[in-house]
Length: 236
Image (tube, rainbow, N blue to C red; front, side, top):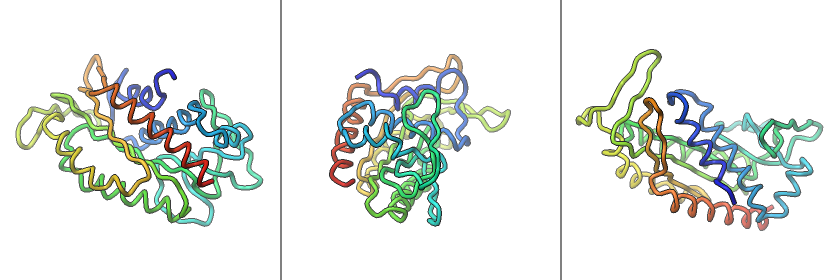
């Protein structure tokens, strides 16, 4: 298999221009490719056939009629009867409103100030896994957290720029990333599958990006895809 599409989208998030952490659509865009990678893997014939026949779609709004739950970054399931799934250029899986969730994903990116926000991030992840199962008790849930290990970082708030300097009040990402990884292990059992991806990005020209341990990351993600495919066949 060629490079996983999810990793390609994570890289695009930081290359070619500044990453702005308040853009709520970034996690959605990364999560979309989980399902594309699962399709490309072809480990689950059932998954592929349901996608090809448009009996399963990706829900861009992650909202099911009549079910009130927190919005996640990506959910996959059967379309509401009577809707017409829509094709999206560059994607195999059609889009549409779903009646329930069969696979749900939540993506978080920790670029800087990780320990300051770690409690909120962990609570969001716990809540999302719970909400997916409120919609559909049998849903397969996936949590993905990308963690920056760069030795410095430049963030943006509107037109203002804030570089890290390594001080106690403004630590560089590499100073906090190992602690964030350890903290996040406490919630991984709340998901069927949970992946932490270490990367390095300074968020300044020329906007470099690299995975910390690319082989390990690809092996772990590939294993998750295989397990998801087999779990999908058993459960649905």
